[in-house]
Length: 171
Image (cartoon, rainbow, N blue to C red; front, top):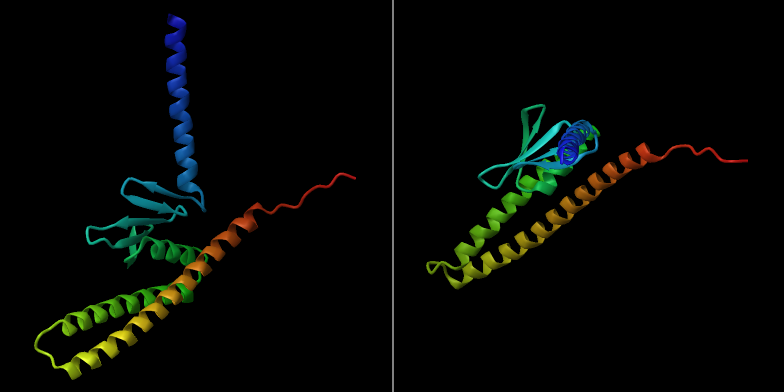
């Protein structure tokens, strides 16, 4: 009976120590991405926090760096910043801003089309503008998807560079 009690305490203590070691490795690993409470920790330097406005704020070394509307874009920005690809990071911020403006523009056109105070000619012109805005919106989404693919490639390339080791061959 005493033996089981000691074994249980040792098991709990060992489990707690292993958990502390695992947490320490995760927080210092330069390639780890994990959820901690309401935020996401990325690459030991970045914290992505979801706000009440459904935005994602990125903190680097406890300083607000940038805000995005999507977690995917926030993580891609962290990857670009990690690999010091400033042009790609700034392009991602620019494209997200353009996408947000296009969405607002399309909402404005939709409300205007449904208004009873406009003429048929104004409605047709607005429908044409809405079609153009939809095409531009799709183009922006494709550009953002390309940026996300580049970020994925950069991160995967980093993994490959870490894991490729020269092999010792047997003669």
